[in-house]
Length: 295
Image 1 (cartoon, rainbow, N blue to C red):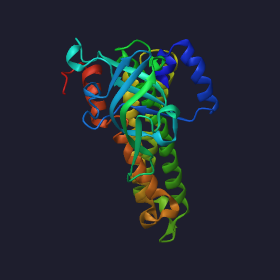
Image 2 (image 1 turned 90 degrees about the horizontal axis):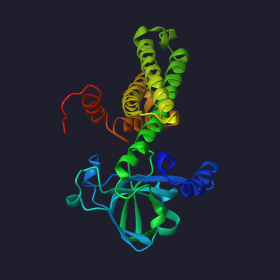
Image 3 (image 1 turned 120 degrees about the vertical axis):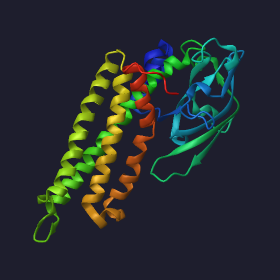
Image 4 (image 1 turned 45 degrees about the vertical axis):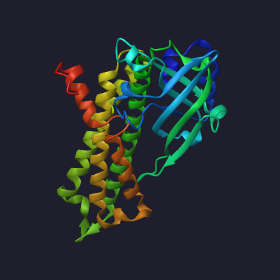
C-alpha cells in the first residue's frame, strides 16, 4: 500500500489505511505482471476505459499473489492506448480495487500451482466495472506512482528474505553444534563452520542495506538504488544460507519433519521475484554507474 500512502487522496487514505492497519481489511493483492509483458511493465495490455462514473477493465494479470484471500487490489492498467502517448511511461493508471465487490462479477481468479508454499493466481478481467473514485492520483501518471509501491515491496520482501537467512543460520549452527560424528561435533570442522559463518556475514551486510532503504522510504526520500541493491543482496544471501543449511544437515535436510527442504525451495523465489537479480544488476549498471542501457 506504499502507492496509496504516498499518492492516494485524503478520502482514500482515511477510508482504507486505518482498516488495513487494524486488520479489518484483509490482505492486499498487487495486479501488475501480465503473461505477455512479464517484467516489461510498460508493455502491459490490460485496459481501463472511463464510462461515466466508472472504469471498465478488460485484460489479464498473472502471478498475482494472495488474490483469493485479499479484500483489496492495487491494479495497474492502461488508460491511454500505447500508440497515443508521447512517452512509454505515460498512459498507465493505478486503481485501488475493492475485490469484495467484483469477484465473480467481471473478475475471475484462477490459482496457479507452484513448487513452493506460495499462494499465487492468474486473473481475468471481463468488463469489470469499478468506481471512478478507485483511481489513485492523476490518470495516466500511474507508472511513476507504482514505482514507489515497488520500492516498498522490495524492502518488505527483502526483510522476509532476511528473516529466512536468520532461520537457516540458527538451524545450521545449532545442528552443527549438536550433531556428533567421529566423536566430535561436526561444527568443529572448519569445512562445516566456515560456510555457516560466511552465510551469516552475507546476511549482515544485506540487512544493513535493507534497513537503509527502509529508512529512506520512511523519510520520503529517493530509495530506488538502495531498495534494489538491498533486494539483490538479500536474495543472494538467503539462497547461500539455504544451500549451506541443506549441506550442513546432510541427508536429514531432505526429511519433511525438519522443514529445511521446504524452506530451501521457497528461498529460491527471492532471486526471481518481485524483481530478478539480473534486472537489479541492469538497474545498478545504468542508473547508479551510468553505463549504457542493456535492454
